[in-house]
Image (cartoon, rainbow, N blue to C red):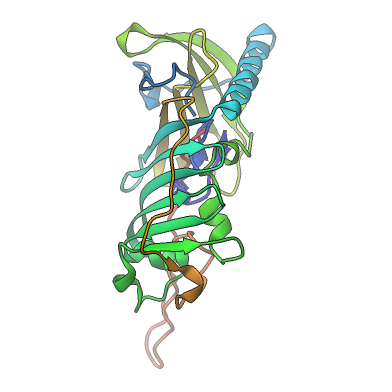
Length: 313
């Protein structure tokens, strides 16, 4: 599992978004689907509020939970691809990351609120490593650093970002299967059998996630895997902050299905645009602090949005 950076991961911060789901979960990359190939991920009847406390245990239960988790990571990473949907909620507007991850390519669609406004954008990663970005004006300013005066005219247009371009690393992260699994910080402590929708039997592996710059202490999570499978169906992360509890739920499906991604037409190269790295970096959601007016009151820095854990495996 991998905690993601602000929604973008992105999100996935959920990145936005972003504890990556096992895939993922994002992103972010956050974030995949240990279930039968080609079927939608069954979710348990439990709600995020019922997330196990994940009190550390000892003996066979903990050992079995860790062994199953390792098997899930291995099977997920070997998959040709999968589909995932991550939804973060609890404090502020809901944030979502939807995507299809493959071994060398993938797609993502993200929605979240930052200091620039409500951001909505799509990403395509082609097999040659290029990332194509399409989004609204707030996302162009935050994710690509496009100057405010030019962002409206570029809204809805595809922008090609390649290795070496300023925002490339932040955009490319978490789109493929392997990058979704690049960080493993989940610490399994227990497992139990639960019943999902349609009477599907699931093994739930619960545990904790160590604190980081994106997650406070005390974050808990659980992973659900259909009986007889090592491909996950659901990944839930709950974290308490000053504003309350935020929960990110990622569901996985279509395991083994690689996404078909091709370059869009009519794109413009990022290197030809007028850009400037946003405060805090690309995709961090922090708008510049207005310069104080001579003789006027001092300005107060605008608080940056609290990153939301989320994403995919």
